[in-house]
Amino acid sequence: MALERIALISDVHGNLTAYRAVLADIASRGITRVINLGDIVGKGPRGAECTALTRARCEATVRGNWEVFIAGHGETWSPAQDWWRAELPAAEREWLFCLPGSLDLHLSGRLVRMVHASPVDEFTRVHREHGQEQFAMMFAPTPFTGGGRAADVVVYGDIHDPFLRSGREGTLVNVGSVGNQLDDPTPSYVILEGEADGGAQAPFGIQFVRVAYDVEAEIEATLALGMPETEAYVLELRTGVYRGDHAALGLSLAAPEDSRHP
Image (cartoon, rainbow, N blue to C red):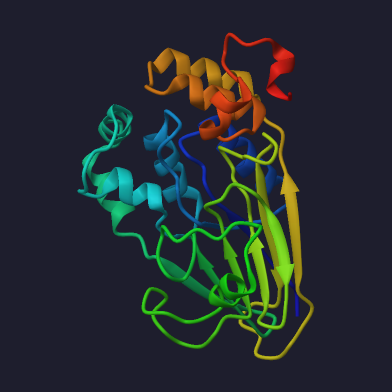
């Protein structure tokens, strides 16, 4: 039986330039199945175009915390949130908010569960430096995942930091981020390879892919659109350093080039 290849992407965050580059790389490999793990919008300026591209190119999408922030009806916590929300047509906001929180697929005899952040909800964050209790929690069925059995493989996004860890409970995979990578600025995604719907154990592969893109073109588009919080976004794109750490590291658009890596 031929092996199926599925691309798993996450955290586009309105970065249309990076998104197009990643989708082009996926297509160049002959991969037609793409699943999006959420956070299509927010932080970057072109959430509406990224949402439309997701609907056209991804066979399935799960809801991330930024879909809740931007498409939900909760309290507004910054002027930028209003800007990102206004940039999205009402129909797109409704589509984003109604996305499922979890998806399952069977590949090479394994139950692969896909969530944005965790099987608890879109907000419970599990970093690379997690403990054993958090690791085990990622495989457990919950009301959020619709019950069922424990997963063999869990794939998620949220933290913008790709990694893989295997243990007795299963294999945990973080795909990284397409549009806002924070371990290094280069977009990341994952390819799963295996026998679709296979009931027996069969060959199964996990591949991490990095895709270069024109960062300065994305920055130019951002500046032209007048998005709030532009400096934080630009610095994240150029350095891969989380905006909450910029001040402590002395990072700013006016800072010398070598201050990005003190």
